[in-house]
Length: 97
Image (cartoon, rainbow, N blue to C red; front, side):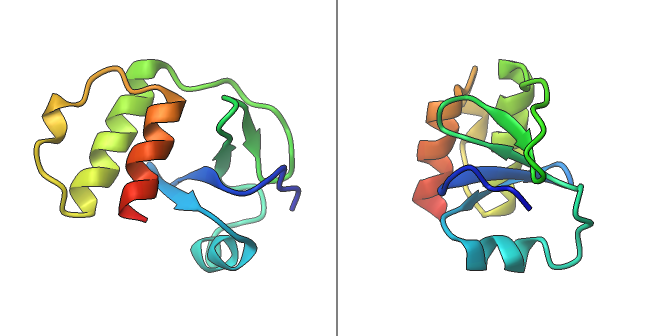
């Protein structure tokens, strides 16, 4: 597993998680295959867990994933969130981390 740096957002099974260290990553990926999951870094890079670059999500796709994650965490008023950037996604998910 090649991780560029911490923290990053982990896109796994149609949800996002804020990952701040290796222990959290190990726990989140316990049942995932080695090639599953996309790491989204604060600089906007999207890499597989093995370090391969992949296309970035559109702003709409990222916004939907952030909204879905916030709802799963019990947050309300997520429909007010529109056109979420990677920076905003980091801020929102770090707050609920």
